[in-house]
Length: 299
Image 1 (cartoon, rainbow, N blue to C red):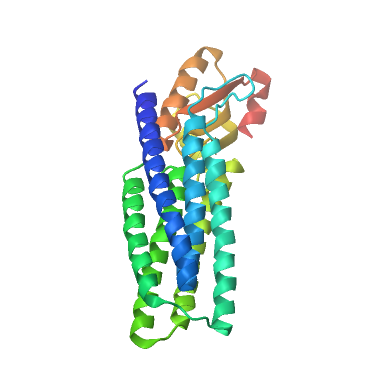
Image 2: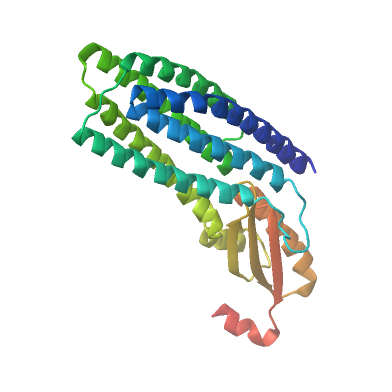
């Protein structure tokens, strides 16, 4: 019960922090859009577009936390927790699309440079940097192992870097008049956003495909159980997956000779999987080896 209470506490804290970050991002988004249009800066426009996706992503993340609190029902026996992972995957895809747009726009502007009002651009970028630092600080105190939080934080970090790039570009333009720096720095930010997007898509996609968690090796589980638990003849049909990163699960078949030992062996399997492999939700199906099967099992 203590585990459930702790999970619920983290869940509520994540939800609250996501809502605050969404509010900050949404409040500044309009100002940055106007600033990007008036100054003609791609770095500001890219950051404004990213801030819009941030606002949407943070809003979806908050909604996912709210909905995932609903209890399981007969049609959704695992509840709504995986909605967080689905939103994280959508955030990763959104980041990838945004990266492609920034790259295309930057290459176009390198080929045909446009005038930029560096002074106003610097002011808007500085304000955006303050807002993004505040939003990132809010999310930084949340559970960073949660994929939904990671997706939201990746968006905000990309925004923060975009504000830094816009501020740096404005400084260079004010000092030298070299306007292509705006597009060049935008390409650098796009590369960093692409890395975050790829990691987010990989990790959330792994859960959605019900692959084994990266830190769990089913082959090692089998070898460990056979070595650690007396009376256990074989372990097979091992399946390990996750509902969310915080909820890994496993099912397996355990073979043994003595039916009287089955309850004790099953308890030992559950305890070993919890202590050595971090798996707390385990389903074990027992198989009793008949006397005539002994030779076949041994071979």
